Image (cartoon, rainbow, N blue to C red):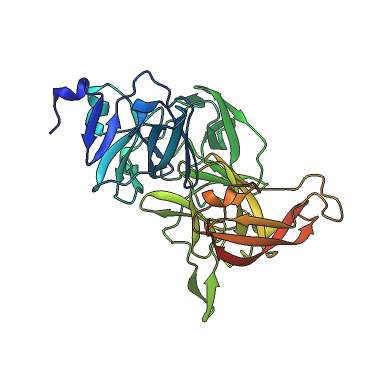
Length: 373
């Protein structure tokens, strides 16, 4: 089915969908949730071109209107059956054979179903290597922005530094950030999580304001669970905890609400702060507990509580109501925002603002309604 002809084919019919070879062209799409928009560079012969974004596959359609104007559309693709694609650097969805024959780098690989939803193929953790190393006090293989957790060790009166690789060590580590391949230095850490460039298994670093320690994500599923303490059953809340599911790391935002951190879109989310429990592995946000839902700023590289700097006594610069999709992602008000929010919208209401910790706003979760747009 696949042969040398792939090198010269401009339009390839694959599973009932036309995949256009667009080398050297600038047609692209922008995706917000389920809403897809084709760029103004898309031309008539770009119809059928596929893109992968956010685990979904989208198809471009370009037509000529009655007044000879160009009409550009983009919608979720429907495949005839399950198909294998890779995502090129420009976002194009290409068959893996096409990408190989055209010498195009694939930045990720996907298996896409007939519903247009795609599952990413990932390298098993056991096959990965940590990129950033610290040996004999020297850094190597690091990249600008990398985070590491470092311990100061006294060897016969001589202080040296080494990676902290014991998740049970307590908050004894110092947070380092790298500026070049072999230059990393201590920085001030804020309460939260940082992606650990020095370890695959200990994939994040947690800091509580007094120090840092690498994280060993648990094997739970953000559904809370019962433990026995002095003969009594106690529910262990997992809010704010990192968990590992199928070798992917998630943060638990609420009971049965989790957010995958690999490739996450930089955004703000609500997280349940009712995290009083008997364990110390969930104490990163312990100082913010018990006041409803707070906003966290989520990036793949770091996660922090959002503080409303300059909060006045009446909460004048804090929004009274905020709205999320089912993942608790917060959206800004706009004319077409609901078109990109999926199937439902949830309202959160401002309840209180705390001065200790300083300037944190707490919300209660309100009703959830289906989106009909």
